[in-house]
Length: 437
Ligand SMILES: Nc1ncnc2c1ncn2[C@@H]1O[C@H](COP(=O)(O)OP(=O)(O)OP(=O)(O)O)[C@@H](O)[C@H]1O
Ligand SMILES: [Mg+2]
Image 1: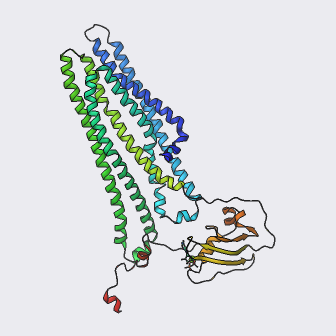
Image 2: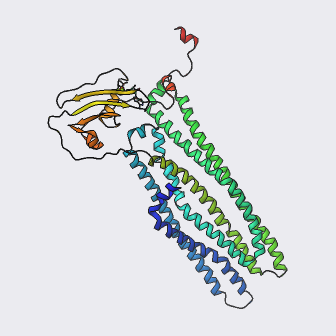
Image 3: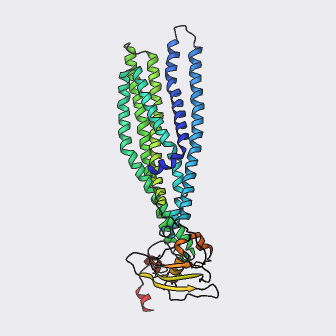
């Protein structure tokens, strides 16, 4: 929620304007039944009908124009929020420390730019919608109360049923939506990794197996979304039936009260119009709560990106030391995990500005680790590296990389465990036959 509010904060003036427009449009809609009542009341009195009818028309036009303006305003705002979220995630990816990015599946990182911000679209206007709908709902009930209290009680009973069903179902909808988003994230991760290793997949004839795993993620996302859709259908149906029930009750009780002379027919009609109008705020409330919930889930996934550590360096002015080697590594130690073994243990070397230097060693000796330090993808646990005599700590990442060229050692890895990767060509235990050969 906080992240969502943080994304919305720059748009506060537009949000407030949207809220005000929404309120005006609602007020126009709310006044319509009362204007209708006035028209009916004029019947038989001989007064001119033109006045009340013009009033009704003006109300409809004001409601429509303001509603249109508000819709366009909120639609534009929603796109702006989605764009802001996307841009901020993209910028954070490029500034993040390499370890933050390499630790997660790339495709999963991709969904945090593509799919998740998209869900903020609805959520951005949902806060305004919620306030609007709540006020419209309360105002409708109050106006109903001014018309007839007994009928209001009938309506409230139906509203209570609708409210109870919503209170139970709405949280489960958001849970299902969140699970679906996570499944889509997993799907992105698996798919991207597998596509990158497609040659290995095909050479190992693992298309079906690997495809099946990814399809399972897609199915999981669908299953969660279907559950959310079913619950949403229930919420809608119950709300609609609740309002219909209220209308029937109002009609029955109202007709009886009108017959007994306790209620004007025009009031009954106005009351019925309000009862029908209740569906608007109820529907809007459901829709906005659902949108807000999925927006909060998306914002949570985006906030995990915000928590990524960025590459920060504080450049301090200094100049090249003449005659210093291009690179000097002094007693450098590097560990990938705090308790783990040292990948580089007390390594020292100098690379002069002339000639060639080759770093040779068996697999796992630490060649790539050394280059990760030289390119400052990682920082050493202890020791120091200098570039033209200036320590890395006093240089920015960009200054260091500007002096170096690097060709990466490609090593595609299929998503899954190390065991699955090692056994990729032969996932099943070896047969007796196989052992004999
Ligand atoms: N990201 C990592 N997390 C944990 N340990 C790592 C990581 N990368 C490398 N290591 C470990 O650090 C040590 C040095 O690995 P490194 O990749 O630097 O070797 P290398 O000389 O480049 O090997 P190769 O010739 O196979 O490329 C190895 O023991 C390796 O298991
Ligand atoms: Mg290597």
